[in-house]
Length: 271
Length: 222
Image (cartoon, each protein chain N blue to C red):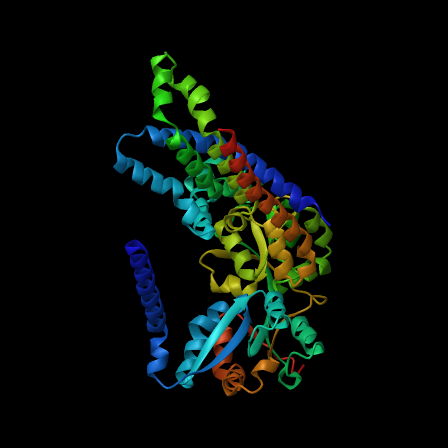
């Protein structure tokens, strides 16, 4: 009996302590004025520029606002939005996913903008595992090619489209492809040398030029551009902080940050 | 339904359990022979680590050992001309390392339960260590050892985190059932995952019920 009491007592103390710790971690928030929160679901390729530059700059400018960012494959984030996860903004590496959400009535159509452009590159670790691969046409010499999963990561869809445009897709698809759920996974496989080469964004390769080497850049007339688009999700329509972040992301200040991280500003005008 | 991920998974889990079974058994037996309890504690800590570590950390260690730029990975690449990472064997490696503690711990527990009287009697009657193990310790510890093997098999079948890190996600080669479920769901195709989820759930459930049945039946018999 005494043991039981001790056990229950210990459990209560542990519970109190852990809950106490929890509030310590969020304590900062409570001591200041209550912060407005904006949640953004963003393509994995935007991770670095958001974490290192945009979010700190935004939170400095709007002191009472806190940005919660959820990074992943744009297809995965789209799925999360469809499943009802509460996010205010969607920054997709692909226009298609935002259009699909628009068709489903899940985004605020007036807010749908094209914002950035990126390119698909063939990259390897530095120094490369396989020196014989010098361009996309040498891809059949690779044991394994790392790519994004076309269903969940736009980098995979763009990669497949680029290879199709060059007439190389069937050849590559008949070999071994390791599909990453988002571009970060593909980048890590390439950096580790696990996959000799892979298709990633130019921005990722430029960002980590210490470990990654660009072998070839996908370009040409029949190549579709990789366009990143931004939209307010229905959930975020009434959230003032979401509107603030939405506007902030289109300022010249942020444009510079994107360009510094290897993205190009979309100059094609309105969508 | 595409059966390839199921076949890959079964092949991986089977090869992995065959290796883990013997390695786990040997290590478990070895640790019961260690006299110093301090040494025992620390060695046991190492053996059990993969059970409590996040699979991503296990994957990290495996990459740090077998990655193409690491000494062992490089050595294998230059001698055999094959990389370990991104090969089918990498799925076995991940499944084996992660399921090893289950096999090892169950076997150790079962062996420690064996009445030392029998072991001493066998020795008195002139059996050497090997024969004592095969004829006395193993039969007496069998229920626990088999339960451990079944658990380890089920765990190996479900391995995901370390696998995707060292084996990649190559359809028809390293894409196991859990990886297939992940790929389908992350791509927004919940329906595509239904069959695989069902198969994994049924196998895992049967494994646990099987262990329960076996321990009940084994207990009644003795």
